[in-house]
Amino acid sequence: MSNAGKNLRYLRKLRGWTQEEFANKLKIKRSLVGAYEEERAEPKLEVMEQVCSIFKLTLEDFLFKDLAENTGGSYLDRRRQLKMVAESNEIRFVPVKAAAGYMTGYADPEFVDELNTFTLPMLAPGQYRAFEIMGDSMLPTPSGSVIVGEKVEDLDDLKNSNTYVVLSRNEGVAYKRVMKNNRLKNKITLISDNPQYEPYNVSAEDVLEIWKAVYILQKANAAPVWDVNQLAGMVNNLQEQVSTLKKKLN
Image (cartoon, rainbow, N blue to C red; front, side, top):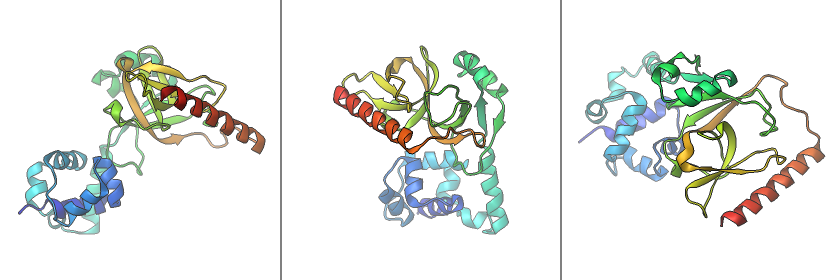
């Protein structure tokens, strides 16, 4: 019998994740994580491969070694293992001045390696990139903010109304809310938080990369000051805009 369930539980607790958070990382149901940890079911191969990728393990070690026992179980050993995982989460930073070059170099490892990097200790394992945004189309997120995004591998994983950094052939780097177009399957609609900017469509075939926004970094006191009436007006306009779009898409 393998140690997969026991090791899954150990690794989850090592990162401090709930079963729900771990399930989201693995793109499976929370109940499956519980079943695996309680050894009521054996994890599927693709799930185990994903766990091994996240924690930099071999499939053999994950299946047959007791990972908690092999680390000695001490606090310092667990911290060292946690640090090794965190160090793999270097975030490449794309400033505005590098955005044009990024359009042609995004898939070039040498170009990407030349970008400056930083780390955030609160990030879970994954592939991240940071983009500096300019302009007022996403107010109240101020111009000059840095959006830290996690790589989205499949357009089917996009969730309506969530914010993403979208790299496309015609529009370049754009930070917007995304709506899937139910009427036009090969297009997605990009929406600004500032209702003064009209939504627009991007063809799926023109999309080069998509990064789901997970953190927004900004300078202290950079956010604009809004009064209640301004905020209420913006919210109402945005709600009307989204409602109109939903009617058109459906």
